Image (cartoon, rainbow, N blue to C red; front, side, top):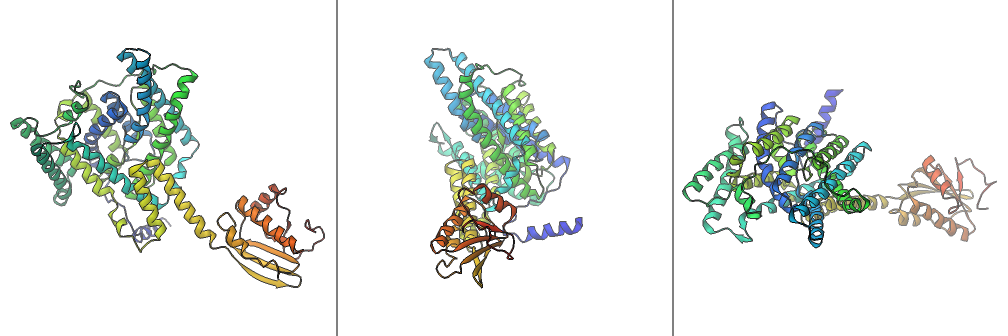
Length: 548
């Protein structure tokens, strides 16, 4: 039985228009080396998102460490990487800005203002975590299964474009494009990183190609900066571009503390909207990433467990000075494509990141941005589903529209909004197509006309349903047989009421046959709205007809 099931699943995968699967063996060496590569890619993004939020880089680095290790241990998707993300950072940025503005208006010192702002941030992150844990306990993570495949493709393509756009900022300093020499050097190092990442696996798979690319380009960048200082932009240069007072990314261990915010209703009202929005966006992005990795590896993660893991990680973040976060599509793709499959990959990524923060900051600070940009460009190439560009004429036009719409909304609006819009569009298309399938078989017997319905009766099929009946020519008693149909919503009830009144105008009586228990219960609840004769079978009489 197991062998047969596996064979069926394999056949199903081979027959798909688009196969996302990445073949990689699962072993400890791959997990650890892939985790090391991921840890290097986590650092600049954690720092960048800290500046987006308006806090010290160590707040983002702590978040990346705690999100990474806690979700790797307790989450529902081995191999998925979590950390400080732009989606969450953007949500909390207005909260920080608002508290800072209020503090300045009150005449507080700079230290007091930042302490108050961080207190509100950490309080919101704690509340965010509690909401996500509740979401998981209520087992609402299963609703990710409602996401159609076209929405997933649009999500993936949109994220690839976002990741690409995010790297373009590295070519600018202070809003100005790099000078010609540093720009040419940076482009050359990016190309070298990508070449190593693309061609090294064809020679050997003993080491992750992306890690080798980072090491080689870092060595070249180090010697170039020795001979011509400033010719190669590094991680430390990026930090100082945003805050010249920061001289190192080194930090100590995160420590426990209660957020320093007033515990009253006013503060709760302030942080609650941000916490709810961050919890929703974080879970949507995490569950969508989980679903993508499921397809890449043809394994199954646990959405509800991931919700709890994400929530627990954010809860701990709030008490240990992290800005919170969620799953990271880019770093997860680096991990999966580098061979990281088990929980060890996420744990090692977080541990290596912490070691770099504590002991190896000097090594990280000299890594050229070009190496990390090159790695992320490889992620873009691997993430974008190029075969989706060739789907025109092979899948319904509505699916093409959904894919394109979700991609565009993901780029120009928000990931969560894009997914929700895509689901709504797909649901409306489904409803429209099923609504058009409503039809009936007509049969005349003595003084009754029998209509046997085929298709669901709901809001999208109401128009087709009403066009079925011949009110003038039908017999005195009209029977609608629901053996192959169901009433799904209030629009269906209203449609029944409408044709009942139409038949009454012709002094004819309407009867319903073979209603399901659910349909009968629905009509019973609407008894004050719809007054119909419900019969069990065709051997009926009209002794107690309600419409008589």
